[in-house]
Image (tube, rainbow, N blue to C red; front, side):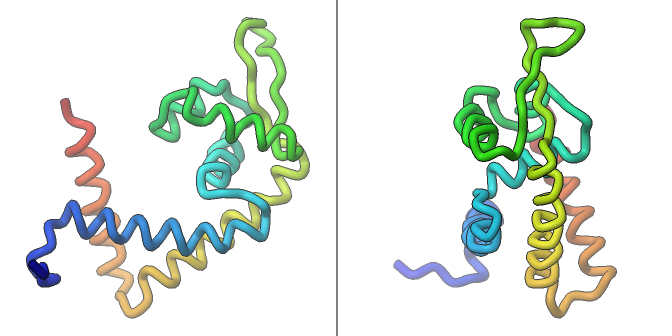
Length: 144
């Protein structure tokens, strides 16, 4: 049975779009030897001086163990460092290295290119409405 486009549930359509977006971004991030998860870590750490893995996971809306391997690889590759928190030695703080900081421009460039591609042919008002609707969906999903 073939489903017509107009009959695809919004949930399914959003899943299909996310898949296409992530595949497109994956190719763009390869230039920096990063995957989308690592690019998200880089971007999030850039917006903060340092944070714990638990804080980072909360910002990314994932569990701390789910980003462990990405953090380890990024540390091995020289994008970030781990160091003990001065106030609590049990907590390891994550901080971008110079290499990580220099990559951030590329991460922003990929984000800008993706937005150009995604919103091609749309007016500024349509883009603003779309973003407002996405925030509303996020808020609805955050409700308990």
